[in-house]
Length: 97
Image 1 (cartoon, rainbow, N blue to C red):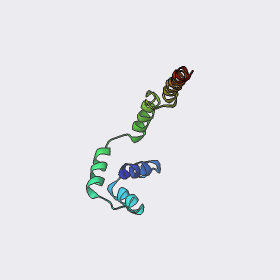
Image 2: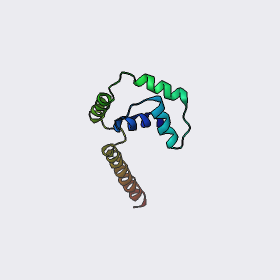
Image 3: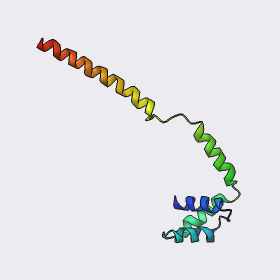
Image 4: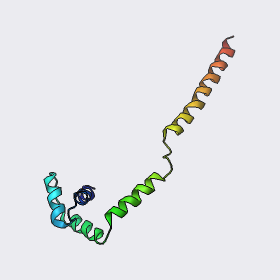
């Protein structure tokens, strides 16, 4: 993942995303550069309009449905638990008068 971050950083700074530049960024961050991963990333980015892809990713994320664990979903789950707790208390009071 650090290789993708390095490529995005280079792109953001207006630098060419090349093997040499990626290697320098990775090494300056204190990580060892894997030549195979660098070559693979540069080859896969050849001919790709990074700005366009970032825009598409942003649009896709903004139109995506909320994750199942969202706050609204959690609030809905809590309500039945409270009702269940109340009904359990009513049942106990019926036992003890």
